[in-house]
Image 1 (cartoon, rainbow, N blue to C red):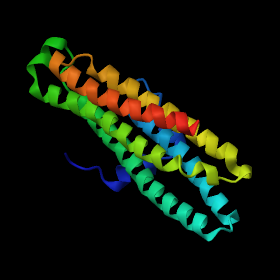
Image 2: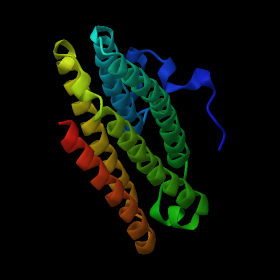
Image 3: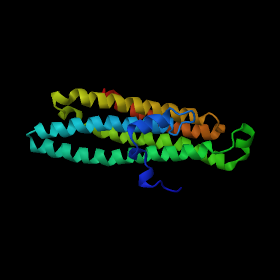
Image 4: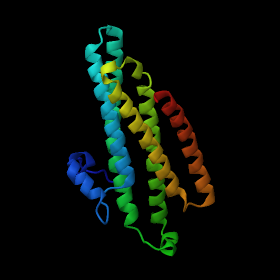
Length: 202
């Protein structure tokens, strides 16, 4: 798969351009991409609250802990944006394929692209699980002044996670039975992990 150039990244367009592309007659941005960007915004709120809290914490051990965790989260934030770019790339490839059901059944490239469209949100679920797993250990160190930002960020992450579950499920409908069962199993496992983490966060 050819990688997108940095200048083509969804992160390099303005918010106004982003919203316009999403609401065009022929949307230029995918639902999955929107959900992942939303998750990124939620993580940004969490990072803001942790960094501001870190400045007010005197305990050197906790201060170092938060510094290490925010560094990890920032790396994962970059991965979230890359996942959004990848989802858009996969979607563009998929929608360029033949449109009729009969044509789709005869085209092996369509099936390959469909599998990619399923694996993309499933991979993003793992990424969000990793993020939420880190965040759950940090929330108790968030200062009261910034707790609303932290809680808002966690709620956004939770909603994004559940949105990705829905997207993955919708893409599985046209799969052969054995493939649908395989990917449903993966989805269920990651969904269970995520829901447990969401319970801890909220």
